[in-house]
Length: 444
Image (tube, rainbow, N blue to C red; front, side, top):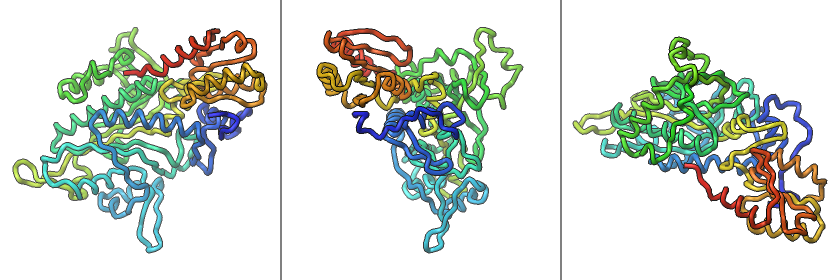
């Protein structure tokens, strides 16, 4: 993409309404624009990040055996009335009526709808277990939306739902999703700590929230450093093997991890002093097991192996994809701007033309852009070099290929790694090889 023709409206000034780093930087880097309180339009660069995150989440859900569906944003109120949650959910639910005076709502979550889909489709225990997920927009009418996409009213979420014949099967599904989440966060380039959590309005009696570490996080967290050394890859834990899932879950639950609300000082004192870690964290995922809470309330049963009706056991599993964009920025930025993990950056490479109109410089830039067009943003604007350097750092391209008249004449470029600030002068072939090798490397 050529920056001169792109809808990437960067800002020099800090927006007055932005209170936290991610909100400021998302506005300044031209990722989003606010349309109403807690509601944002995603511009091309921001949408690329959103899609990159969604793609990784989707790949890991598929690898765990989950099936992708797409449920509507508008739901009939009758399903929520059937489960008993319609009135209980409160003012966060946006309730509406159609022209026929039928009660509808903009879905804040999908337990009722997925239960209805499965009860229309499944009859026998032989059709279990099943896990389905979708990636869809949600709406919760927050009384005070703030912090940009971190606490908006409309948000993109991956939610998955498991159906099992019995508790033992439900636990296996829960552990599969937990391992899938840890692999997802590892690929997103962040440290995530699973912590025992309250179930909230969704209900249930087994719950973990996933906290990624960020200096500006909303919660104080305490955890064992052992979490930092766990290898979640398939070579260590086979997600299709029940014994491996048990070993993984034991590993996760053996080590101490708690938010401030659930912090146990006695248990914390039992952790070796050299392994105690404290910090701030942001919740980006939550998983629940709640048994037959919805299947029983909505009369969804299958014929069990004994010929009797059995209510399937359920779990639900959410990742806030749009929230993750803000969380990644909170976890990885500096005074100059965003520092994207390679896996989610909107553009892997920024090409900086320091002398637009110079024949040799233009030619070399066009050559590089031709080879990297799918992953590069070419700054071909007629702007001063300082402006281009500042915008490249602001937007957070993992790599910058900097080309000026002197280097172009000698067949050399400057290659900058955004995360470290390291700069090297290389031949064009050397720089291209370095970037290409980085792009081809995929985390486990």
